[in-house]
Image 1: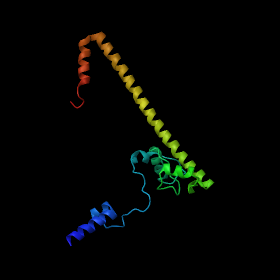
Image 2 (image 1 turned 90 degrees about the vertical axis):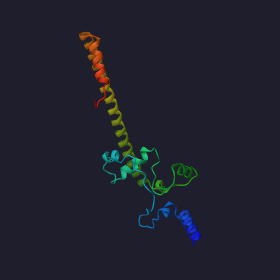
Image 3 (image 1 turned 180 degrees about the vertical axis):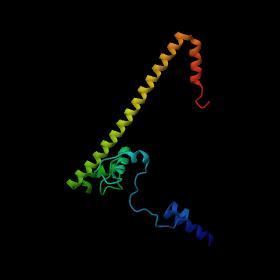
Length: 172
């Protein structure tokens, strides 16, 4: 009997995967359908607005694909990789998402809204980094000017003491 239960457990694990090991018999928690991409930048995406014509969460969902440089799946394409879809389209198959002109135009407009919002976000990030770099350069120039004036006025000893103060740890 012990051997048959072990065999039954191995079979259950082989069929059901890791859930059988956990002893989770709840089928209410099972998600049906495709899973969304893991949310890596939830805080960044929550503050970004993608336009007024997108449904709530739609812009963030499209942006996840854009940020990972992946093809945005259309209707009927979920579950297929971008390469597989391209191979099917080059073989002559027409995917259901590209069949209707009006739906296709709406999809392209929504994708373009997300692309432009992501470009604005990237541009703002670049501008912030450039501004920080300019501020650091100005601070370095002021520091050099100050050490030069202190050297002329008081000699190298004061400048040596100032550099020792700057080298001290901040928490001391």
